[in-house]
Length: 283
Image 1 (cartoon, one colour):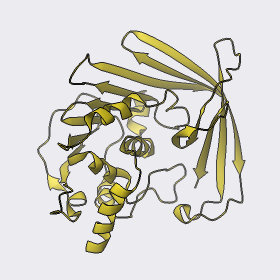
Image 2: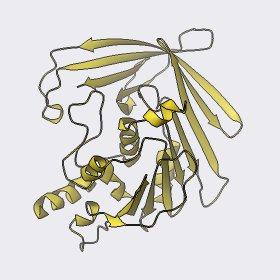
Image 3: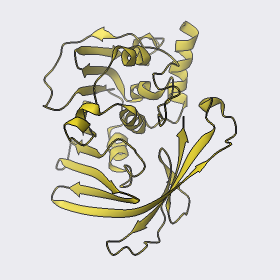
């Protein structure tokens, strides 16, 4: 146990993990049956302040199995379920790259984890929940996660990570339909950016709103399932993958030929393609 925790703590900082994308992956993997029945768009929001980040979601809420999973090492409630993309072991715990305390409030659960990389904590704080008083949450928010930022967290880099989220972030996600980012920098005005997506058949529309200004991106998508996939230790039992191409168009349906990002569930980098490309595992 101690050796495993130490390895987790070491890997957490050795791995180039972008914790924002890890949190978006977790939100994509959640259930939204309550929101869907209420005709609410499955949503995730980030409020980024100088001392904390507040993450709100209208997902169904934590179950006992979910709590046991985030309190463990190398376990997941997502195994062998189609479309699940969270990473075992690191995933949720990547928040400790920027935070020393994480408060989770979901349904009747309210607990916190505390971990400081100062040599006095072998990692046990990342998997040991502590009772935490409940706070008020807005109507419709079923899960709130609050990250209390480390004193030495690079605020400038943190804000930039949120500012650099690609406009096409929601393009290949199956569940999340709305993402909002509220930034409160020390200097300058507060900024809120809202992304939303709608799809009709092969067409996908991504809307982006910053203050009173809005823009729209239109795409035509094509899908193909690839079988006989080679064995991958990280994706045991997966024999198929779905490849999705998204062709950007203007509002006249004229193709837009400009460099687009490559996705593996979430954005990786630009490599010169004129279409957005996604590689999606099927379970």
